[in-house]
Length: 286
Image (cartoon, rainbow, N blue to C red; front, side):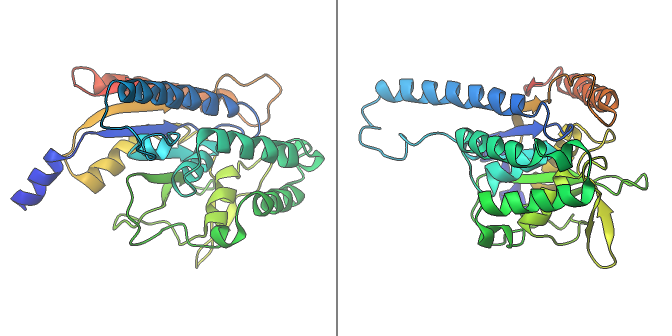
């Protein structure tokens, strides 16, 4: 046990990315723009460092475009933020790939009359058909949890039963003894993350069947759950170096649902995080 604890201490500190959930099809593009800026800045710094070092000459791996899964040890999201977490970790998308994917999804789903007029049955069918056309079908049908996969990055999306006050479950891409979420496919996880109760009905999963919604003002900001998860996985031995928490911007006045409640929840979580990190060596950006 002592050797294992020392190994944790010898590992580099964790970097964490958390992505708030909002109303699908509105302001989540801003998250991708911010992440792109972060990744591009780190890419520039890496290339600048490589120019000063002869050791990296001819190394094709160092010349590869950085992706979020190369930078962050954990990516956590709720709602649309959970969708991005899966795209970045499970599919190992670059930010430009995520932007291209989401632009097509937006035009096929969120701009469709069924979504605008809250035709929930047709909205879900349109969403599933669009995901199947934009992502590999064999991958979508695989279980979200992948065992035996060497990984630098872990990801999860939050979802909860909207009919009770239960805490959100974590739908992880990695095995965990802490898991209480029912088994699901990658497609299940993506669709339930979009289920906001207004445009999509809560998503049924498990035996007996439970309903899950991925967007809600009770857990719009997943940062505290990410910190709890890291402690459960890593223990107290591995420190945190950086927490990047990205919201979804300020929604317009005509959006459905209760965006003000979502924003209040996200801001409250951000304030708690800033208080928690004050006086430590952990950097928090949110």
